[in-house]
Amino acid sequence: MAAEAGKVDPMKQFQLEPMFGSSGWEIAGVNIAFTNSAFWMAITTVLIWAFVFGGMKRQLVPGRWQMAVESFTGFIDDMLEANIGKAGRKYVPYVFSLFMFILFANLLGLLPIGLLGLHPFTFTSHFTVTGVLAIISFSIVLVVGFWKHGIKFFTLFVPHGTPVPMILPIALIEFFSFLIRPFSLALRLFVAMMAGHVLLKVLSSFVIDGVNAGVGIGLMVSLPSFALMVAISALEILVAGIQAYVFALLTSLYINDAEHLH
Amino acid sequence: MPQIAQLAEFYSSQIFWSLVFFGLTFFVIGRGMVPKVMGTVELRDNQIAADLAAAQAARDAADEQEEAWRKRENENRAAAQATIAEAKAKAAAKTEATLAKAQTKIDAKLEAAEAAISEARTSAMAEVETVAAEATQDIVSRLAGAKVDKRTARSAVKKALANG
Image (spheres, rainbow over the protein chains, first blue to last red):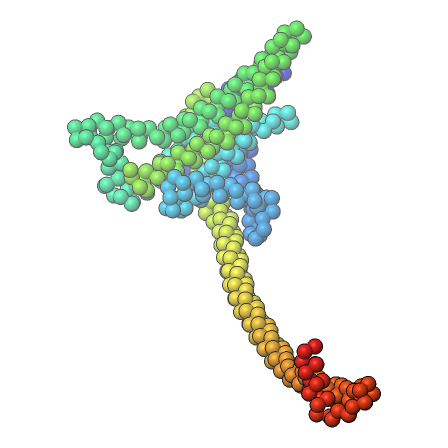
């Protein structure tokens, strides 16, 4: 990005910028500027829609595309069935949306379209966004838990077989670990995505600075840095999938708590 | 860190658009399209299960028919064997009867032949005696010139024959 100046700001990629002159948009006095982040959310949504739409031919013998879409829905379905059981089926739409939304966002953020002068934006590297997703997941857990078990949902904090004198301290610990869930959920994704992108940008600044400093240093610094970038890019693709999976998996585990208590 | 530096300025926009686009994803794709995709999968699974069950049933039916066929075949074979045995027995009995009949006929013929032979021998013997007696008469008359009557000659011949 700022390569012309010979300097790369590894944080600039997370900068929000209103697009289409929308910085003044407001609803009820609240700013809703359509930023690059929102723009990439839109791209993500459209791409997921296109992906799933391609798999809706409903053929008895599926083509490759339909097979791919079905393997994704089957993956989520299996995960929910394994973690929640038969009751998990009704959460497939939510967990599928969550998983695909995060997965596509992570992968789109890694697109090398910087080569074309465009700036990919990874909105999962913003805790405002991951926080919203985590709070939605957490709210579902609360709503399902209280809907199904009412006040008995609080027995979630007292595991079976707890000795009587230990009930109070253990309930406290369980309660706090429960409250921390949305934060850990949101922060895990946000940190993983941000760290990877910062690392890549830092390495790319090594490459650029090394080249600018001359042939000798360029060979010594830029070449290894570039090799490391290639390797870490591959790792980041893996992380993109893993983080989406972890988010969906933890959500399903939390929903399982709400469905079945302990 | 822009995430924090720009928080005050953009948090509302971030939350708003996250809700909008994740909401779109959930309601349009998650609620609208995913159930259809999964329905297709389930339909296919059911169809495969039904096809497998039908194939199993067909195989069972085939096995059953083969069993029945085998049983029938065995019965037929046994019946055929019985028929053959019966025919064999009948043929054997018939042969035996024919043989027995032939044997009696042959026996009768042999008896008759033996009787004829012994008769012939007796008559031949008598003839021989007669001829011998005549010859004796003749020889005696020629040699001794004596006339021997038939009875004497005959008894002499008989004596000689019995001795010799």
